[in-house]
Amino acid sequence: MNVAVAVYDVKQDAFAPDSEAAASKRVVVGFGFWVFLLSDIVMFSALFAAYAVLVHATAGSPAGPQLFNQVSVAIQTACLLASSYTCGLMSLAVSAQRRLDTYRFALITFALGAAFLALEIREFAGMIASGATPQTSAFLSAYFTVVGCHGLHVTAGLIWLAVMMAQVAIKGFRPSVDRRLLCFALFWHALDIIWVWLFTAVYLMGVLP
Amino acid sequence: MTDAPYDLAPGDVSIFGRAARMAASGVGIYTIGLVLAVILTATSFWVANTSLLWALGVPMGLVVLAIAQMGVHLVFFLHITTAPDNTNNVLALAFGVLIVFLVVVGSLWIMTDLNTNLMQSAESMNLMQQ
Image (tube, rainbow over all chains, first blue to last red; front, side):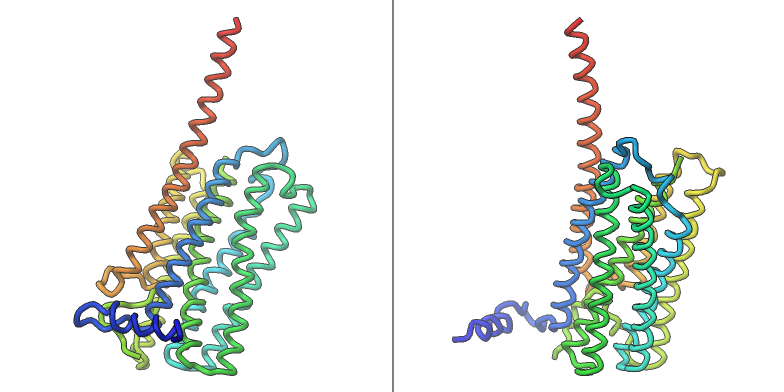
């Protein structure tokens, strides 16, 4: 007997509480991805804790006030916040099954995310060129780890968004594609929440006298 | 596919429905969230750069603004509510916040304590040698 079929049968019979229908697959998938995102945030909290512990361990090399450019950080913040907004508008377009609006808002979201990433790479390149590499001090190791990890998540999100647009183009708005788009929107909004803590704890607190 | 009456996926915009009037209210929710987030972000950058505020209170103010902005994102972008259909999402979020709090505050507390104790033991070692 096929195991998958057996599991599916059990789910239908045993897990449905009295008189309540079992949760739809959309709810189960959304909740599962929500739990993944929370565990991802717990991982980020460890990186934040490492940064907070090591922030003064500069080993005589440049610290935050000399390295961080607040104008660049403000533009990055604006890009990511605006892309979170257009991602929400994309979710509404998906819900209404408006294909053209979905493409339009996905394109704006992608462009803003790419602009954010370009600014971050430029900032990293400038710091490394001036000798502030991850090997220079414990502070810089922690800084590049926590900010770089967020940048990698944004990169993964951009690839995911491109793949989802290809799926919308080829497969259309079928339930499986809708569920993936729901998960993508959750992921993108969660990245913005992490960035709120990044610009607060790393950049703004880093330049305080 | 049967829609259960008692559960809602986090971030699900189907609550706004497909009718044009409801979709417009969805745009309104996201726009309110964007405006609030922009105000809070601008305040954060102002607080960090102004000399008008008591300097020792600035980090605490930044943390409060970040928590407020996280709340705005959760409510207006991720549609987390206190409604019964969101209980599972809120419980998972509460557990996540608890773990994050333990990891960050616990690490800072232990490492500060270790630093202090190391300094004290060095002094007492010197005293013993004298």
